[in-house]
Image 1: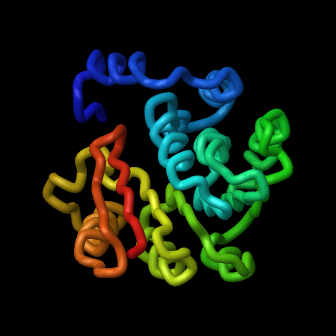
Image 2: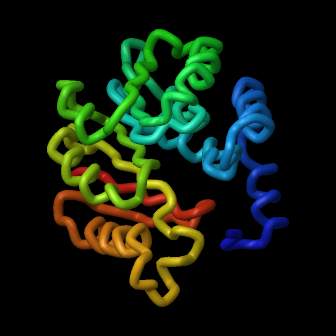
Length: 213
């Protein structure tokens, strides 16, 4: 769903930083070989993630939902020299695809892949985070958030993707639509939670930036 015209979206992308060549290759191969390529962050959102990461300059990043690793590499651009990025996904079929591109990047040794249930894996990481990106199953967004907030360093940032859910957050809620129901609750939680300050950006499918106070 386009919240602004496609022409205007293209203009914003054209007047933002260019997509790095490695990410352009990943973008192309994802569209050629992988199901649901619209899940990929893409050029504009990728540059937003990169910019936020560079501004934060994190030592520790957590990503929940790897898909083909596009956003992972965007976030890695801001890592400190000795920093680490832990990314979690439950789709083992994409593991080797992700690793191929991670190994082509300059952050190959800093990116740690984890395969399985994020709610089970996160407590085993034994670290605090400066930056977290949530882009996984919507029904668990609140569960991920509640687990992550106590693990954030003060001033750390949580970025949440797909919070506008193709505009469904403005439509009448269907009785069996659990994902939209959870996202409505999640958006309300981020707005009202005194532990964070939040801004919801109408970028692509909605991107919320929440800073831990």
